[in-house]
Image (tube, rainbow, N blue to C red; front, side):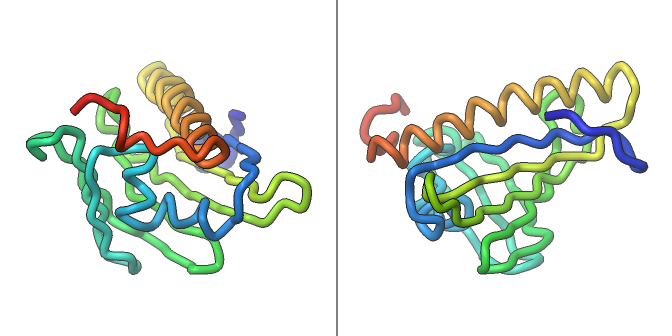
Length: 153
């Protein structure tokens, strides 16, 4: 889950999801897919240098804008991410691969984080938050539960 590399500390989370890899990847790369499990609204310009805009309320007054640093339609996308704790710059590297017995394997790598007190707090908060979001993604896809129908906005 936590790795120390030459450039700092990294979070790595993996989740097996009993769903086709293309559907899982669409949940990271399309407005329709993202709104199934993460924001209330989304718009995606799917290309390196493009933007993902996530809306967190019905009025679209709370937004997060993410630059797409890298994109490969074969199953990888990198989001330019700022951590909520202290605006630490820590990109999120997503990979979706086919998994014979489970359907798809999603791997999230985020970092690097500085090995300082503040860096470790940011890393811990990001790890817990992303673990929750990955579990939510798995539940939404496996149970065919669409969060758009039930979440309060």
